[in-house]
Length: 305
Length: 300
Image (cartoon, rainbow over all chains, first blue to last red; front, side, top):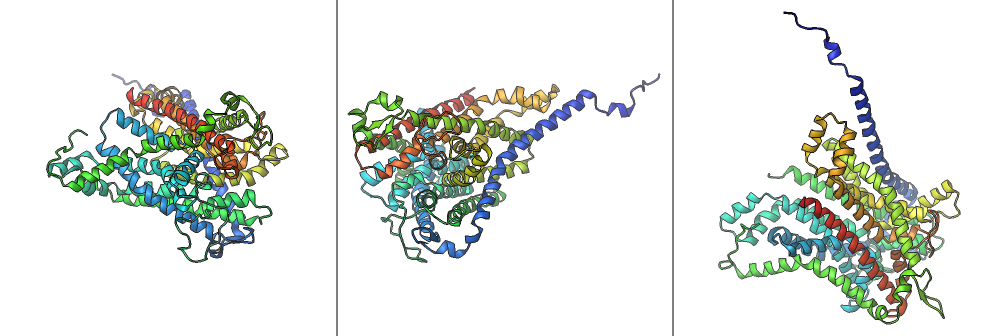
């Protein structure tokens, strides 16, 4: 019997014309989507590069540690920089515990029912409330109703409520990633729910919680609208080099509002100062975000499961 | 989670307190959402019910809150400003956002995907006031150069900024939606000889359409609520928008620009809070629809 050898091996492994066409389409589609993605990423590099290029003449530690001078037309960003740190730290102290415990409730205690759905919906909606509406709320609730006046405290509380969903969302995700068997093992040893959460669930989800907290910091540092009317002012002189220069019931300057002020409200500001301020703000925010990513990557390598 | 220990007999008293605290934190979001509505409403309520002509408020384009003898509070121009700038922003952000989401979820190696996600996170982290500043400086000059316009602070400028700000949200939610499509769908289509493009167009997009819609809605909600970027980049003049190069002002920008200058408790002050209620309602509805759309997928 003869084997039919009409189809030579070369022919067998050569693409048909349809196959070739499909491959071209495939590559074309891939490149098309790659270009779209790059067009989205390009602005980030362009903007950061442009800001650094424009701000280069003022970038120094002196810029960071001197107060704005001469009606904000000269000097540095010390007062706004310190103000932003105050706002972020105070809002973090409020938002972190509430956010983490809210996520614990949603992931560990809440059952699947209509009430939990409403709570989840409230979290989503809280994240969706426009920042300027948070500002109005801050004015109505903290500045006027609670009688805090325009102060760091009122502004920080407004920021805390605004950034709460960030912490809740990432903590919830982290708690959810802890395998159920960990909890079951702990319960079987006779531990109560809270003991299980404190000894097993929270330590095992610390990376996600930390990421959420750090992202909250970056979000709070960049916000402008919610602090405009609740505690941040255009100008306030403080002692240079003293990190305790603000009091929590004082008003303060903030980097984000400072950038808005000097780029729109103050005439004849030398060009480099707004760029310098912008780069300090973007730099701090991106630095904090990079820290969040490092924490995430580092702790992921040490994951136990 | 119904297997959890529920016995309350042998646990210490301190734990009851802690659980109470946890439950309180759990419902805090509800309290805050109601609180926001309540306090914003409270500040604007007396003028909303006594004196404000709601029909005129919504349909008149005459916004003269500081006129000496004839104060008029018509927000039509502001509402149209918000919607036009958001629409234009979405026209730019949606194709790029969805395209990037498809690329990241379908074509990337895991390592490249991580890198892209980090870059997108960075993009999302840039504060809105910085976008406003970019609009004021770089984009302003670009628009003057390209369109030969007298001033570059226009609706187009604002919507480019908004597009860049809302793209990260669209990408991350759309990517989640695409990832939720089971691999068996892709494999089945590929086994039938479909090209990658056919898989995307005929299988993935229909299967993930709810999630993609939610991504677009949440991106739009973000744009509607954005304040600083549109305050700084859109020219700040109350105008019915006619072209992408017209100067506009949005609802959010109006509150931000005028709240600092009004007398507390006055009519103008209360009107700004009523605009706040309007904004709250709009974003609440958009978020609610997005949530229902997402829930819709989980159930099916």
